[in-house]
Image (tube, rainbow over all chains, first blue to last red; front, side):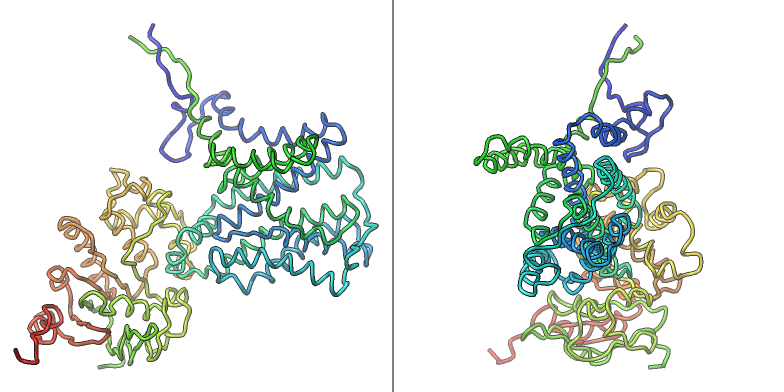
Length: 334
Length: 254
């Protein structure tokens, strides 16, 4: 009996597109596996980690959300250097609602996601016409400006911030809330970006003239994408306000702008899963490096450079490609 | 001319800094007509198209579509009125299959606003439209990535994107540039078919032979000005046109 090598997906790939014909549980698992993996990870990890690493996982989810939000904007042709703007708007919205009006976190978080999303969108609305680096510069400057405004006018507690927020019921609630939302954002938005609606958004990134030429108002679509991305990041901000039980000027810090970009770029831009993968690797890496003290940032930077040089396409794209190239030995007649 | 002109340009001018790209261009276009626009490089043909479709704001003058001034509208609204154009430099979404490129025009508000436009499978409509412009269905060309298609197919795709909008006026900006004779011969019948469907067409073209075969009227431009207009035969015999294409004899007498 002769044998030859064959790709595992050979039998189920129907056309050059991502259309598959599935005939057995094994074939279904081949496709479902990579999709079930993040779900299983998110549901099971909190159960096996100790309290410290549970906090790290929380951070992973928050940065994953910020990175997903960044990726949505990037796919729609808007490179944001200021995810902190949306994060901060959400954080301060939740903070104000809880501190001044005493609303429960279960109300403030969703409301702040919407309100923060709206504020972030409105702030950037005047510059939607800008493209490329010009738009990016504005997003970089806005959060820095807001910090100074808060400092100078002493609104929202000024430099001291607002403290004494009502916490969420328990760490389990916190973890599963943010992880569930991360998964919903990951799968839901990927579906959205694969739909005709997402195609228009990606079209704006690729060739906006051609989209205008279809009679589509690209600024209306860009504003919608901006709101979706801003609301996700604002949710993360509002959530962290209640986790830290504090909101202050650090929510507009550069960390919340730069780390999500690093996560999305290392993970593989253009596939929300890449943003998730990137956050899943970079955040724990940064924690693990805490032990070496002062040189932490140097090593962290080195890792980033290595990743970007060795896998410029992004970790997720690499894994995806390799996964579809798995081969097995099959028997052939004669 | 009569009041039924579909499109009318009145004293249309456009300056880029000190450069006069369009200088007081006047013309009328009746429904169902095919107007050819020719002229040497840099004579303002593409600027004329951009001004009509509002991709550039004219410095002065008016554009009337069905008697309504449109020169101050944003370009996407002009498309919704029923003016579709192709671009000289085609830039499809290279990483998508050809038929997926049709989804964006098919999800246009212009299409949704037409009877039945909101319903039906967009992928199927895309394949039908592509077949109309010569993507042979049996050969599965429409499923290939746009980046893998030869220039001839990309131009057909560009044309199909314009047709998908079901426009009343189609403006083709050098559709034949960069194509082989055989490819041009393949696309010509599609344009003739559009004419039989009653579409009004403006064609900007350097391929005079093919253009003169199908054009009702030809307008010649040079240095941003309209220097001649008339039937293809008249235009070819016009002295100003000859000198624009062949260069002036030195007039200072040598």
